[in-house]
Amino acid sequence: MTDVVGTARKTIRRHRMISERDTVLAAVSGGPDSVCMLHVLLALRDEFGFSVKVAHLDHGFRGAEAREEAGFVAELAARFDVPCIREEVSVPSFLLSRRMSPQDAARLLRYQFLVKTSKLEYCQRIATAHTADDQAETVLMRVLRGAGPDGLAGIPPKREGIIIRPLLGVWRPEIQGYLAAHDLPYRTDPSNLESKYLRNSVRNELFPVLREYNPSIERSLVNLSAIMTDVAAHLERETELLLPKVLKRAASGQIALDSVELAGYDEALRRSVFRRVFESLHPEFAPLPFQYVEGLLNLLDRGEVGSSVELPGGARARLEHGQVVVSLGSGPTEIPTVELDVPGSAVFEDAGIAISARILDVDELPDSPADSGAGVAFFDRDAIEGPLVIRPRREGDRFRPFGMAGTKSLKELFIDAKVPWSLRSAVPLLCDTNSILWVVGIRRSAEAAVTAETKKVVAVRARSLEESTGTREDSPH
Image (tube, rainbow, N blue to C red):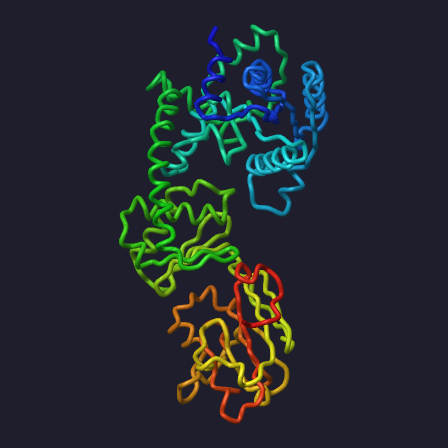
């Protein structure tokens, strides 16, 4: 019989999965793989100096049958004298308001449960029972979906420093032999035999055909995974170096890249950047399939300002002036209309900005108050008509730029300043009753300008929430 414990031991050591005095939360469904993993962990706990707890989630799919499995897991944990944490969710209810497959939704809720439980139970590691067969299936599924190097790397042995897969080097026949040798009971989920799910179809229908061409197809795919893991790691390092050079803007639900800078790099790096950016916005749709990456490359190569491509999950990429803007379907939230007290402040969480105002004496002004930087603007208090209001742009907005004769449309200003169309509704406008006083962070108007006759000044300052530490700022200095 293959030494399953020995293989797991090597995997744990090679990837430094567990430290001494860790508590490992074992995700146990009751199936053969997870029962084997639990038994192996218990066989190794004294050697590595860790403790074990069991977690089980009922996904709400199979009623009494699933509840029986939950009871079986609890009994198994009691037999081995380890704590067991159980919970039940309803994936069907969760799906009512989301565009996800049942399998993806179940996976999302399962990991949320495991992470939450690991924190509540003070567990440093979460162990899942992925096997070498799971690895082969995952790589083949990603080949079918058109994944890149990171996708073809398959299932990582260790993820985010907490999730570990100690059985990733073990094959299912070895697990079956181990269970038989130790007389370990388990439960079989009948849904694993239903080929309506892609993974089951690949396992039950596609692999038998592929074995006619390559009897060792599963091992070949696992070897491909190992090779692509190294390739993906190299690309990851290069992408980390490139991203700061091409990143122009990152806001809630939206990332803008310098299209000119990005176009100067080779296609492999551009692909990697696009995948990374999209997956940072929509991690549940990772890895981004080939056809969408091609669409992004074509968008960049065509160079047609205003053209766009659709991406999974309702996301979209649009080519703006010198930028590729990748955003979630709804784009950034429009800035709300609020009155700005003087003195006082307003915080716009979605736009990531805080705007504050205070009154100064003229002798407190800097030497060049009209040209004091994009983050602050000064106005003659007595020339302001009515209350100050912060609002979003409106169709037909015009204003009188400081230092220029005549008026200019807000649209022209945004084009000149290369503000992406998709971000324009999130730019705050500081207004009084009659005029736009300041297109915040971009250009102030000539209205209510400070002159030699000015006695009191209203100083308005805009700060990113990171800069202002998320608190209301009373002073513009």
